[in-house]
Length: 408
Image (cartoon, rainbow, N blue to C red; front, side):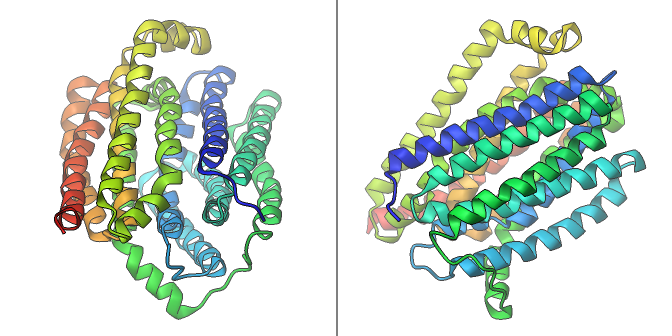
C-alpha cells in the first residue's frame, strides 16, 4: 500500500489530534455546564488524572520505541501482543492505587474512565504500525471518528440522564465500536494478530521498564498535585481549577503533533551518525514548541477572560488568573514529554527514569508548600518547578549522548 509523504503524515496527525483534544476539552466544558455545581467536574478531573497513571503503564512508552525501531527488532504482532499485556497490568495496578487513594464515590467513575482509556491505549499501538508505514492518515481519520462518537455519547449521558457514570459509559461503548475501523485499516499494512512470547515480552519489559517508571512518576507529579488540591481546598476548587486549565491541554497536545511523527527520523539520524541533521531537527522542534506556546500566551492575555466567561460563565471567568500559571505548567509538561520520548528513541531509558524520579521527589514538598501558600495557582507552580528540574536533567542526558558523535 502506497506510503504518504512526511508532510501529509504530519497534517493528518495534526488535524486528527487537534480535533480529538478539542473534543476531550469539550467534555470538561459539558460537565461544568450540564451539572449542578462543580463536584462532577472535580470527580471527572480526578478520574482523568488517575487514568494518566494507567496510561503510562498501558502505553509502556512502546509507541516511541516502536516507531524508532529502525532495525525491526520486534514484529507488529509482538508489539500488539505486548500492548495487551501492559493494558491488563496497568488496569490492575491503577485500580489498587484508586482503592488506596480515592474516596468511594470516585471509584465507579474512575473504573469507567479507565475502560475508556484502555480502548485508547490499544488503538495507540495500531497507530504505531500506521506510522511505521507512513500512513498516519489512518491515525487522523480514526481520531476524527472516535472523538465525534465519544463526544456525542457523553453529551447524551449528561443531558438526558444527568449522570456522569452514564456519560462515561457511553464514551466506552462508542470507543470500542470505533476500534473496528483501526483494526480493518492497520491489518492491511501488517499482520497485527497478537503474538505473546515469554522471551520477547520479557525483553521489552526490561528494556523499557526504566522509562515507564520514569513517565509514571512524571504523571504522579500532576495527579498528586491535583489530588492534594482537592483534599486541601475541596472538590469544588479542584473542579474550578480543572475547568479553567483544561483548554490548555489542547495547546499541550499541539506540541505532540510537532514532534511525534519525527521520532523515527531522530532515531535514524542518530543511528547513522548524522549529528548535524539531528541537532538541526532538534533546534527546529524546540523553536516550534516555543512559538506555539508564545502565540497561545498572547492570545490568552488578549481574550482569555472573555473566552472563559463566554464558555463557562462568570464563576469560572472570575478565576481566569489561573490560566497563566497553567499555561507555563503545560509548556513544561510538553517539553518533558518531548525530551523523554526523544531519550527513549535514542534508547537512554535510564536517563528518562532518573530525570523524572528526581522531579517527582521535588513535587511532594513543593505541592504542600505552594498549594498552602497560593491555593489553586500553587498546583501549577508545584508542577512547573518539578518539570523544570526534570527538563534540565533530561537535556543534560541528551547532550551526553549526542556530544561524542558530534566530536567524532
